[in-house]
Length: 356
Ligand code: MRU
Image (cartoon, rainbow, N blue to C red; front, side, top):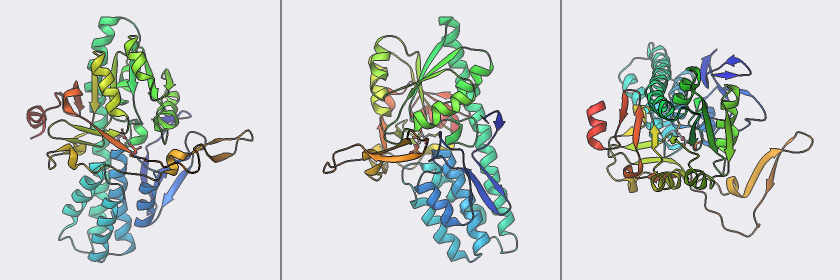
C-alpha cells in the first residue's frame, strides 16, 4: 500500500540483506532498516521493529536465509530456527514459517540450499499478499451488505494494527476496508488506540490516512459507548493464533471489544490467513501469552515541542505493572472468520470444511 503516494511492502530482500520499515519509529519517522544477520532479524522481531503475525512469520523465513548466508553448517541453521521461534511466543505464524522453511531445506545439499531457502521465503511472502487480498474480497461482501441495507457510511471498529503494516501488503482486518474504499463504498474506521504500544494510533490510523480512508482514533475504552449508541456497524480485528475450535488470541483488549459487541448485537469478525490457524492446541488456556517489559506501559514516547522523539515516565515510580500482550476471545463471541478461502463460523467443523 501507499506511503506518501509511493507503493511499499513491509519487507523485501535486496543485495543479500532484508529491508524492513522500522515500525517503532512510525508515524513520526519513516526509516528503512537493513537486516544483515539472523541475529538482526531476531532483534527486529523482539523489539517490534517488525510486528503483526504474518509479518513476523515472513521475517523469520528471511532470517533463515540470512543464517545460511552467514554459515551453511546445519547445526547453525537449527539453532537459528529455534531462536527465531522463541523470539515471540504468541503468533503461530512464526513457528509455521520456520517449520515450513526447515521442512523444505531438510536433506538439501550446500550448493542448492541458499537458492531453495530464498525461493521459499519469497513464496511465503507472495502467498501472504495473495491471501490477504482474498481476505479483503471475502470481507468486502459483508461490508457491501451492510452498506446496501444502511445506504450510509459503514462504521467499522478495529483494534491494534491488523493492517498492511502487520502483513506484507493489504492487511487482514483492513483488507476488506481497503477493497470497500476502492469500490466507492463509504467507510469510516474507529481506531482503538491500543495501549500500551499504541499500534492503532501509530500504525492503523497512519496507514488509513495514507490511503485516504476516514478514521478516528478512540481511547481503548470508548468502543462500548459507541456500540450502545449505534455508532458501530461491525468490528473487524486480526489474530495471532486461532484454534481449530474458533477461539482467537489477539492483542490485549480484543476480548473486551467482543463482549461489548455481543451485548449490543454488533457483528464481530476476525480476519486471518490460514497460516494463523493452530491445528494442534485444543484448549485456549495452552496458548502462550506473551508478557512484555513493564516500561511499555509505564513510559510513553512522542514528539516534544522541538519535534524530537522523547520517552517519558507516566506512572508512579514505585507501582507494579503487568504488561500482558494478548488475550483470548472465545469462539462464541465471534460472528465469523474471514479467511482467504471464504467466511466461516468460528467452529471446528466450519474451519475443517474450509481447510482440511
Ligand atoms: O504485538 P503485535 O503488534 O505484533 O500484535 C499484533 C496483533 O495483535 C494483530 O492483530 C495480529 O498480529 C494480526 S496481524 C494481521
